[in-house]
Amino acid sequence: RSMSPPPLGFLTREVPGCGVAAFAARTFQPGEIVFEECALLVSAVGAPGEEGTANRELWQELVQEERGRRLPAFEPAGHLGALRALRDLGLAKCRERLLTKCVGPEESLPSPQDARREAQVLRAALGKKLVPHMASAITPGEYARLRRVIQLNGFRFNGSLREGESGYDIGEVLFDSISRINHSCEPNLS
Image 1: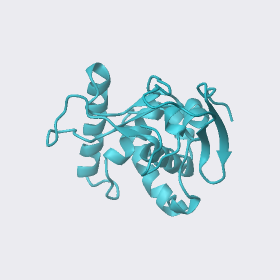
Image 2: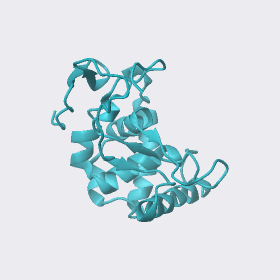
Image 3: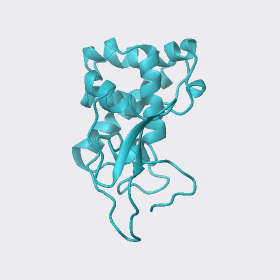
């Protein structure tokens, strides 16, 4: 699998059932900047400028689709990141850069039947040309994994939105290397 090289002081390795993860290869000093990087994907509705506007428009399309009840009930925010990734990064880059990230235990992924049901949202987005035609090549299982990658590896970002405002806590920011760092409720880096 191809991926960006880890920042200095880190190494990456495959963790069975979790994908590729980054691990500290040296001791870091308190207050030391471990590394910085630009986001690989921004699906946050609260993102500034054109990016946030595009995210809000896609989210509103998903809300309208869900309200139209043409599909089984779904949570529009749960599809926003995956659709934005397919639209902005393309299928090849999603496979190369996102589907190598942690999805948690395999048993936490949806069943094949549920994955096909979830992929109906993707098919509807394809029909409305919200994502490029090449996204039709993604399998329901890959789409379910992509949604899970974004759920587990993305960070909530609200920009200037305040709690209670429309779009607050909708969408994520996902970093290529930072998302590979061990996720812990008791982190040893902050």
